[in-house]
Image (spheres, rainbow, N blue to C red):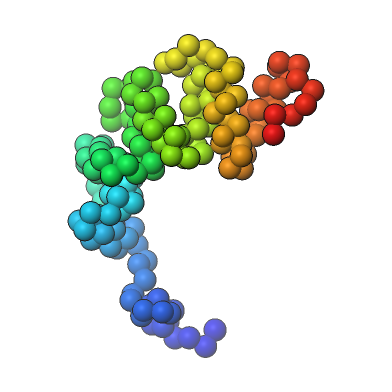
Length: 166
């Protein structure tokens, strides 16, 4: 292109320098988090969880996820649920994972819906229920969650259904 390297590194609309490293992204996001933006707090939680642009810290991840959850952010609910689901930096707790997945799923978070369906299917932290697994997978599948669609097809075969769920 005819743009200079300097021009390519700036937003074409506002001319602000684009971030090029995880550290720069972290600092930019922290500014938004400090202003109280839930999405930024959830993003910082993930940065700390994964050690992207900052030293990895589950404690700080939980702090930022909790702040975002207080603002009803479904992504933070999902991410903290995943930590409890895996025992990542916290004592593994299917019960706490289910509570947080349910909050996110009720706000339409497709992967939380999928994970809840999987927990019901396997009976992890809940009484096993193909019916509830199907309900959550259908909600995720309606949002084009590919794994949910695949799991519904498997469940249909297991249950001998000839008409696909979706």
